[in-house]
Length: 341
Image 1 (cartoon, rainbow, N blue to C red):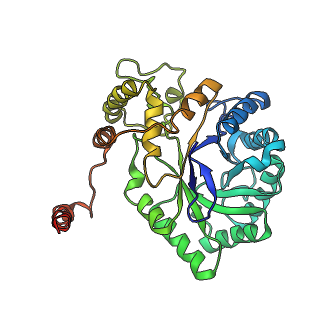
Image 2 (image 1 turned 135 degrees about the horizontal axis):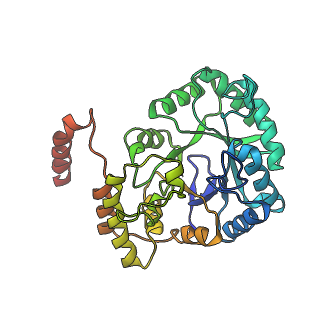
Image 3 (image 1 turned 120 degrees about the vertical axis):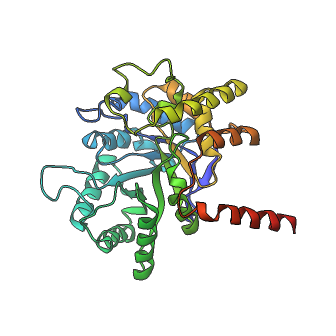
């Protein structure tokens, strides 16, 4: 297992992390997985044995059961794990049981600590932005949690590039602890974050934690033009994350060819591509079975050559958007001249 720095924290995290959305089940979350304590324990132990030290959950997953199960499975191995959880989602019927107000954050961190059976959270992330709460209010509450020792570091998730820069600016202005990482959706099927989010993270020396690296299972290789899944598949029940299938099928063709050359699976190649991206700190994989997790873990250490990376880049590359395109030829000309000197 390879380890990468989490932004500029000095903390090393495994390049593959284990997501726990499959833990707990329930009416709303059951489609993602229904693993109980024992089944989840097998996966956590398997991940630890493989060198995984990053475990991601959220207070919303399975209405809190995911945190409870993760806490139980890590009880005697807490020192081996970096636990990341999240706050923002609705947790009850009350008007203040949602959002990023100081009131909700302080309540929820206490609840998460109880469920996780721990004294501290390694990385506390806002799940989504909150349009109703002033950023200074949110950041001051999070800063208090870091200063109290209940939280080691804070991170964001699902934020735009300008929001990341704005919050970093507020933290700097007021001497507050700043977001150290961003958890974002990134895969060969969706490279949108390359436009503004990744440049912002690189500029601010922040870590990138990738969620849904296999596009909700679409990049595992089980979906093809001929076989688009059954009515029982998760994508048939909930198209999340949304996929432009006609754009993704050519990507799957290239993945299949490269997988055959490496005697690997399509999923392993899709994960390996992400692990070759300089901005990526860790890739969160989710599993319902030990064989699925074993397959995903096999992507660590898998080396793609320049030709293969070029093939994957070409078939999945985003079109250039304004204001990038007016100066493309000028930039290329400058690069050519610079290379000649």
